[in-house]
Length: 175
View 1 (cartoon, rainbow, N blue to C red):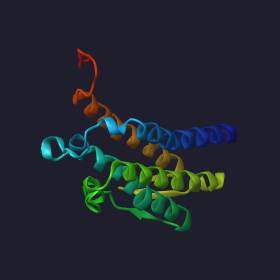
View 2 (cartoon, rainbow, N blue to C red):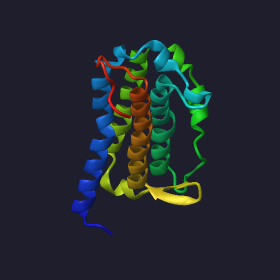
View 3 (cartoon, rainbow, N blue to C red):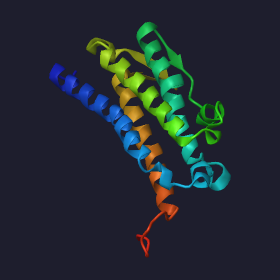
View 4 (cartoon, rainbow, N blue to C red):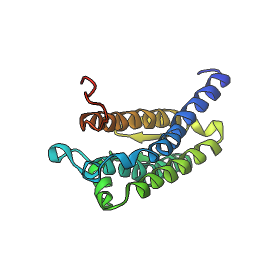
């Protein structure tokens, strides 16, 4: 088992990474108006979620899936969780009908609640586990998964925005 100081450092780094999304969304609020509304709600290839839906997915997952599951891991002896259908999480709300500013506020509020709850969690409770798709994962592993899932979703948004050629340059950057 890792040293306590290593676990403290790991918790701090995971919490910082999870909280970073709050700051990133705050910075995005200042420039998101440059992305035309049709681009915000466009669904590439008809199966990929729109930019609004991706941010809505992040908010929905944090508030309705991740936080409740983490809470169950602490409250229950043997919690088991079914895989998440992200399309279903997206479909719960009409994200494309909402203003992007409202969606970004929901992302920040949901992530803030998740991070605040994790920050208040006693260190010993980070070792509690839940059963996810026949594998046991502790809170550390779940928090790490969340950081990776954020990166995957935000990378997709970054690629999509780059492909839209939203630039004032006379020549676009190479792709």
